[in-house]
Length: 433
Image 1 (cartoon, rainbow, N blue to C red):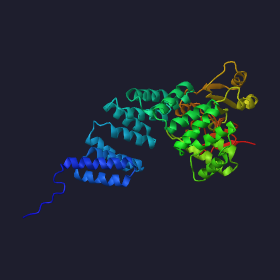
Image 2: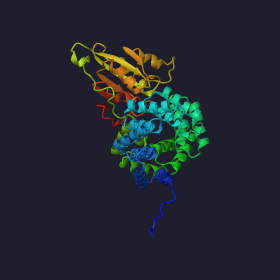
Image 3: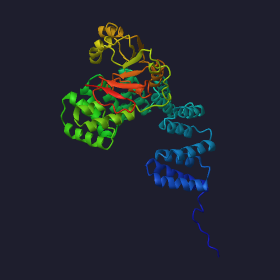
Image 4: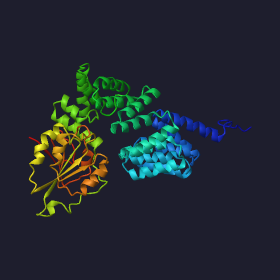
């Protein structure tokens, strides 16, 4: 009598594959990537066109920053099921991470075309527009995502951060509080409430939010520094020494732990202050090449009879210490040799401000750019053929350093707004005494 193996004899092949996929998915979600990958391989050996295993193999490769492999597998998933929006949206996320924004937008649009009610794709496209400083479009997508999924915590948080950037504090607070109502353990929501109260100088309210965020997720970028900043203004010395020591230790290993201005207040090591500035710049204002190299045709250096065109870029052209100090300096420029252009990014303007009115008279042109993205502002400034551009903000509130990241002038100088190194490769000099 022949002996017949009964192994899997009563299990339908598709049911077996489905069971394997569920196991792989659970392992993947638990971040057991190697075990999940082994099961995906096994599934694909049995069913080479298995959509889920193909797509998630690509997603796993993306999570491990193996981007070329991720693109191959996700692209294959779009071929297996061209109607499924998931891999298109994930390809959009991948290309956003690689700063290939045009490709990222194309894939998010493809995902939304396939399913206009896919809230995650709308959220992802909102994140893309947020990165591109297209805030109105970002708010539109976040709001649409929330119409479809009213419990989308991250959409509330990210929409709130844009309201905060636009100084709409009431709307921002509503979004953050809604996020916390849905998920009391949303560390990002608590962190952003802290940021909101910091901006309006209510440090008694920002500090509890930072402490809560720190307890929930201590590795949020720049959280430790913000918490220390609020402590200093609140005269709360509890654990300040320990967290300042932690700040220094994290900086030594390249951690994203604090804005440079805060580091300069609590750590007197020039080396660590420089490291903090370099980390902050690379994270928030990295060099940009989207506008291409700066072309020198038309600049004064190419013609001996032209005036040198000097630009001052600031968000503080008003009754502010920077412009109180500089008002006379602007007036004393030799107008026979220099042409002065101001690029104004002041957000809240007082029409009766005598300091603002005084300094405006010193400039040959006074151009408002607060409504422009960094890229758009940089493009507009390049068209003015500026020879020397001064940044008067540095690492301070409402700075527009991102404009300088696009290289707007042959010579770019940091002056008076931030009294320290900017750690920026595109800033050529610091003017100091």
